[in-house]
Each structure stands twice: as structure tokens, then as C-alpha cells.
Amino acid sequence: MRLISSLLTLMVCWGGLLPFNILASTTQSEAVRCSLYMASTQPRAGQTFDVVLVCNRLPDIYSTDLDCDGMEMLSTVHTKSEDGNTYTYTYELRAPHGGDYTVGCSKLSFDGVPYPLTPIRLTVAKAALPWIPILAVLLPLLTYIVLAGRFSRNGKKHFSEFVRRTGRMNLRVKTAHRHFRIPFCLLLIPFLTGSYILTTYLTGDPFLPKGSIIAGLIILPLLLSGIGIYIQYRRLFFVPVKTQLTIGDIYELIAVLGSREQWTCNHPGQDYYSCRTNPGKYHTILGEQIYLVFDEGKVWVNSICDLEKSSFGSTFGRTRRNIRLIEDGIRKWETGHLI
Image 1 (cartoon, rainbow, N blue to C red):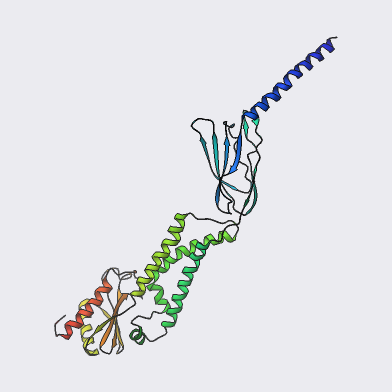
Image 2: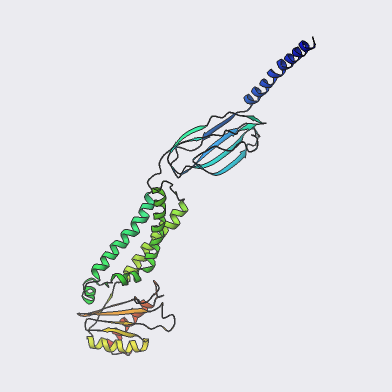
């Protein structure tokens, strides 16, 4: 009798507790509402995109960790609405490769009760062809090839004949490297930056630079280099100075002027005359070359940074000064005035 009574009591207890537990769990699941969705359009490999979890109750601590195998979790932002009825978790993700991915939140729970949440299945497209990095590599390369080819051809031509025909100095490849040193160095910045980005693209883990990186490491150096190349190219042009002085008269003029300015003669020929300045300080990095090419009824005059030294891209106006000295000297010499 006692055994039967115990069994009846146990059945009553189970009969009363079991429905209560089921009801509690069901009621909690119905009271909690959560959704998981992707806030961005279809992402591409290397791009960042957002996945958002929205709940009407505060989830258990550490239960909002996202399952995103094969992706990088960059950041998580948690916000709460002013009325306290909405809890939002924004996850910033990045997929290094194109393909199909699954994003879920399998640990999500409320008061210890798991909340079944359907995961997101998404497709990440392949990375777009990086045109800006491609141009960042091709433009410096083509610029260098074009300039090197031009100076290689022009450098083989006779100096004075080339100046009289074009009004411009014909540099050799070696001296062109020195003359365009700073613009060429600037070209290395976008070239190396673009090469690195293309390498990441080809290896399947593309690096997508932000606008500040593109502007600072690609666009700005390209613009500055283009301006520098143009300025250095214009400095190769000679100034024609009309004169009735003979070559002998000009030699006397340069002897007097060079003695006063401490110039050193390099090529006192009948076709052209060249000399160098000898600055007292910083002689290893500063100095100018001066050229006079003799033509019928005029003299072609120019002054540039000394191409045989590691000179700056600018001599702080000294090349212009040298040209003015010769121009003024020729005018004064023609009128018989001392210089």
C-alpha cells in the first residue's frame, strides 16, 4: 500500500511540474523577439560590411558572440534605445575571399534559456579590379620609360647643335636621373603603394585602402611628381640673348665675370662655353653649371644645378641669377660699360 501511495504521489508531482516548465520556457521564447540581418548590400572580398542583431530584451552576457567562420570580426558596437525596449548589436565584418558564408549567433540566450536564431547565408563577390592601384603602378612606370627613352636618344646628339635646333639641353640618362631625382623619388611612393595593393589582390586577400590612403600615397605624390617633372623639364630650356659680340668678346666677358664670381671653366670651345660655380659652403650638395651656346646673332644661355654633384632640385634662385648676370654683362659689354 505504501509503495502504491508513493507512486501515485510521484505521478501527481510530475504531472504538475512538467507542464509548468514547458509553459515557462514557451512563454519566455514568445516574449523575446530577435532578428539577425545584413545591413549592407552584397559585399565584395576585402570590403567591410555590417551584420546587425536586434532584440527587445537584453541578452545574457557573452551570448551575443557572432559565428562568422572564414571572416574577420573588426568591431562590435552595442546600443540601447531610449525607451529601453530595443538592444542593437552591430558587427563589422570583412571577408578576405569571395564565396558563400554563414553568419549566426548560436550562443544567444536570455536568462539561461537558449534562443534559436536562424543564421544568415550570404555570398561575397570577388574583389573588384583595383583600377587606381593599377594606374598608380603604370603611370610612374610609363613616365620613367618615356623619359628614359627620350633622354637616351637625345643624349647621343651633339650638344650645341641640339640646343640651337630645339633651344633645350639634351641630357644623358645618367645626368637626367640627377636632374629629375626628386620627382622620380616621389613617383616611387604611388608605385610601391600600388604594387602592394595589387599583390594583395593577386594573392586572394585584397587590401582595400581608404580614401585618405589613396589621396595621400597615390594621388598627391603623382600630382607633386608631375609638377616637379614639368618644372625640371622647363629648366632645360635656354634663354636666347641677341648680341653682335664675337666669340672672342664673349670670352673676355666670361673671363672678367667668372673671375669676379669665382667660376671654373669646363669647356671653352668655339661651339659652346660651360663653367661651374664654386660656392664656399655646402660644396658637395650645392653648385650650378652655366652654359653659353654660340649661334649666329645670338647666344643661348642657361644655368642648372650641377649635374655632377648631389645637388638639390632647386638652388634658391641662383640659376636665375647666373642667367641675369650674363644677360646684363652682354648688354653692358656691347655699350662699353664695365661689369
